Length: 362
Length: 198
Ligand code: SF4
Picture (cartoon, each protein chain N blue to C red):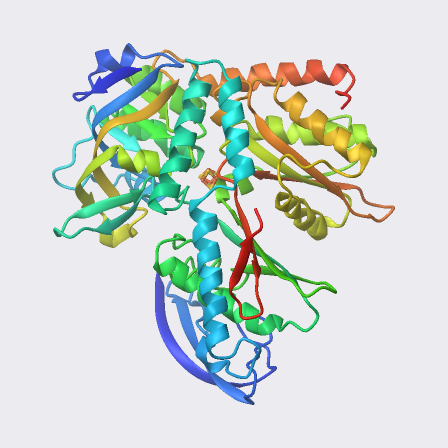
């Protein structure tokens, strides 16, 4: 493909569908606004791609609850949340890594791999640098009171991602799937992804997961029954396919890994819910007894397979497994397995009314 | 821990076996998808680069300009190697490469080329960007920077005590194949028994 890029401006009315993104464009307090398009032409096929560079400037949003000073406080808090998530592994994960290190036999390559991992965790924290160079997909989970303005929040989050990328807390990691263009901002369709969950309480809790590509690639979704694995539509069938996912992944997802699993749902909600399991801490126990048993069994059994850190062989294949269930249609039975690498980057902050960080959640 | 220093002769490489931990000191060249595709399609090495007895590193480092007009590596973990499987064997043979550093292991064709030519696959710890960046003591040069962009460019890096594990050796053994086979058998055994009760 030979690509030629040119940029153009166009004027759009609010509420119109963007010809490139398919998304509805909005901007408070304006009836129309200018958008900048990057037109990319493939000169061999003359095929045209559109790449939207529209970025509402954060400082235009004066008339929202985060107007003025609070807006920049919120943005600063989100930048700090991103920095901390990228450079500091949460305590529960670090403890699990140390425990694994104790259990591996000294002098084995499994133990050395865990030592390098442990040293890397310390070094990243001390230097305030990304734990892994793949700073991953940026997934926000926001629990907010009913009065909260999600549009203003989203703009702050996009601004924070942009700045965090410039500061090197995030790698330039987001690529236009059609043109291959990486505009270096990490902001685009689907990046960052923000899940809003309103609740009837005054707290604003923002959680962030950075999920790398290597481990995302070894995730798997199974449709039960699965004849080859002799997995029926019951918990035993779920167990078989989950363990198959561990076997297939070997060390390729930078193990020891942590599984997030969803039983049920449709294809999309199932994967989404499997990722949400990563918000749980490693030592917590599932309140549903059957799922709790399954979680404990998966970790024990996986650690008997001898895959080990990085697939080098050894006792630590998984550091944890977290399983949730959603209702399904009678016709389908999905089990979705998301794999998280040892570089498990998850953090959260409770924010005060002015957008300031009140306390850390992990 | 075995110290492996330049020059990387066939004799030293053939002496390595699966499971050996190696501290590598010398020069490595980064190469990702773009460089592999280019070399595989018959592309020439840039003037001044010789891969004979050389080592390739599957890595797209984060490199920033330093104060003295040079470069500084701030993160340099391995990327998934299996993407280069279609090209690797031919490149090992054509250029006389002695070592390939990456993560996740590679397939049959690379293993055969390692055995025939005297080359090893060296596994670095995936995700350990900071530890590995510390083992890179200098950026000696960069090639194809304009053509392929920074992560895909060919960076000539000087490393000291760079920690890797031999997971595919020059005698036809692959730790990846062995662990996969053993874990598959172990799982089949485990599935015959009831689950652990909590
Ligand atoms: S899987 Fe995780 S640790 Fe491995 S390279 Fe990707 S983000 Fe880093």
